[in-house]
Length: 100
Image (spheres, rainbow, N blue to C red):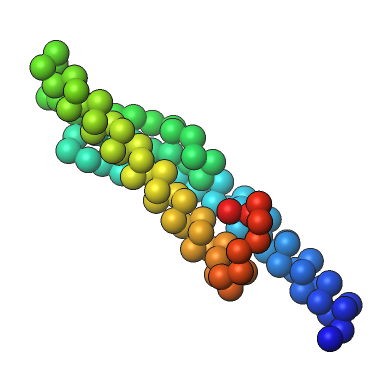
């Protein structure tokens, strides 16, 4: 096996992974569950929470808290799934410690 060719391949993969990581961090993910919508970026930071005004009252507090939690978790799952899909395709399923 040619070590020089292997090194070039590793450098190309590293470059591609950096490009994909940047693209993913800049991407925006959104989800809406029963009047609660949440947006997050690819860094897993929540960028927006919107609540339908009809949901806001003293009696709905627990339901509203649950809906916010579900929407946030769904948004983060969406971002994480795309990250695994894109980086997994690049590494062809090879799990590289510390990468994802």
